[in-house]
Image (cartoon, rainbow over all chains, first blue to last red; front, side, top):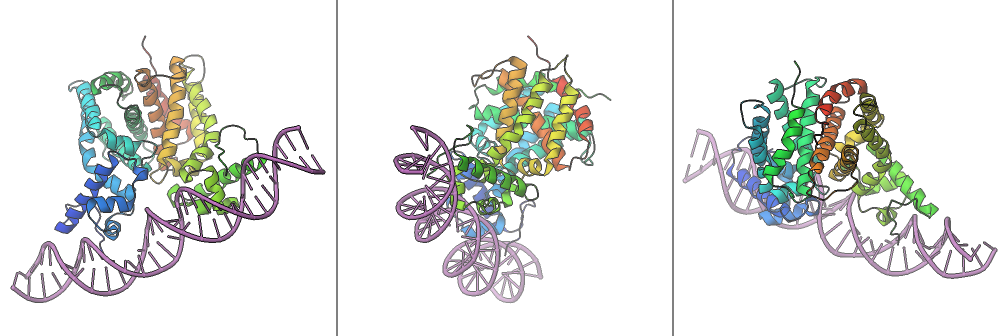
Length: 196
Length: 196
DNA sequence: TAGGTTAGCCTACAGATGTAGGAAAGCTAG
DNA sequence: CTAGCTTTCCTACATCTGTAGGCTAACCTA
């Protein structure tokens, strides 16, 4: 039986093919259907993979969704880092605009995953990754203890970004990424201030 | 067949009893088990109600969870309103502290619902209600169009509060409510500022 | 308290979930 | 190219999901 977890570049070609097929299949399906309406059988069929093979790799659709958006998230995380680490020098509004533009590129997917019919697992995963990025850029720490006060600021910023993104996507991207960046930056910068 | 939706005080005593039984059952179960591990059959059995009766009232466990926390949410919403509508006069830090204390009263429940094994539906519902409250206190508007710029600020604040709460609960409430209020308020007040 | 109305329960069913064991094929190392 | 391990697929099964129809008993109204 397969015990392989996503993570390492995976040695076996078959595993890579199966992972890619399943993740692509889910991404295709979720672009025009809510995650809650997608069954394991649907994904397996779309991926041309047997249902039992699915269970060899993922526990359920939510776990697959988490794996599928991990790669796509890398770009978003880099942008969050760019926003936070450029209080003076960089171009935070530009990074923020690219952040929203990147979301818009896969609007159907993110709307489906972050909305009411989406996945708490994916939401939590995204929030954690943004929290970690925010923590690192504002304090330099890569990890913390549970009672570190700096966690609060990072969680605040991460939650705010996810909240704004989810709201924007659910309103069918009623503003352009540029407008969203212009609206969000004044608020975000107001709480970026750190007092030594 | 029953078509009754939660909302009105409900005319029929049987409906009230069934709603109460199912909601209490879920709240009991979710206090020490993740929502994802709770089946419709579990809830029905705990509530001493037949499984088919469950489906007469709720589509699935997530819909029940949403209904079950609606009442409990009222108190939280009032507190958010109190925080936002007292920039000078009131006691925002006190309201914020009560906000965290209220979460802590049902820590198991909220942790289960907001965490990775929770419900995207509940998360979305909570975020929407806090967004509406934040919008009303900061602008006086009860409703908006999708492209109203004020939505962004409200979604920002709502997401931030949910993010901080979820993070705190998942770290097993490593700070006291009082400490959380003291840590959160400086950040929150920084982005409460409205211009024009 | 007699009336119609409606919620609750039972049974049954088709589909989805998740697990297990074994056969056949593919892969990597040597 | 071979040997041995791993992955994939198949079948089978027990459970859960969600829906439907019909019967009974509780409820509200008058």
